[in-house]
Length: 268
Image (cartoon, rainbow, N blue to C red):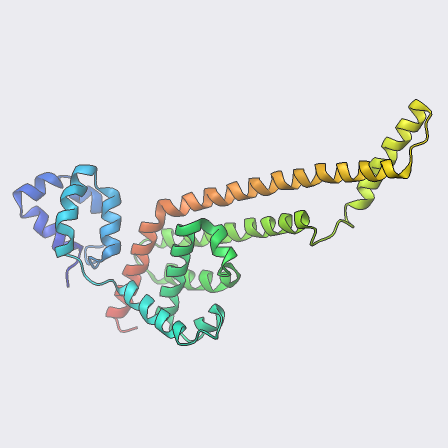
């Protein structure tokens, strides 16, 4: 099985490659040398190499590439889920062993967030299983010898995204009227009453009830615009979390890959 060490030895023993990858020790100093040389290892190295190095790396990487352990478990998990399509995602998780469950949770998180951000992950129904994600990743963080801090960082991102999405949903329910406006009506009515009182006292005219309705609607519009502004702020915060995930997802996937690799080797 080809590992990172296999690649490193070839680089150091080749005069041209050692010149191209002059900083290979620095680039890989935090990586376990027995890390399988899978697509995730390749993807992580591509992020660390410069443009010239990547041009060379793209030509030679395939000869080292091994099948991903993570991808193996992802395929197994999806095959089981496919055979239980009448079941929802939560029920499908109960049909999987620990490795398959970890693999499909990693895959769905990475695909959904990578494709449309955390907002898509929630919108497509995966976010409601947040406890399954947190529990699975927490177990990895406790047991792994490689990058537990990255795993914990992803857990933190998920939990922060969950809080923000709940805020987003609350604002959405207000804007759509699903929550009704009973909570806000007394406050708006008090404002309208003050406006009407001011008009009548200052101008000495009687304000018809139809005008009160217009004032109420206008003030409600102002309030809803405020809610929309707050909701957009939440969306921006979620977008910022997306960027945080994109910055470390290669490290995250490699950490999960290595964990599954070592657990498999131990026959766990």
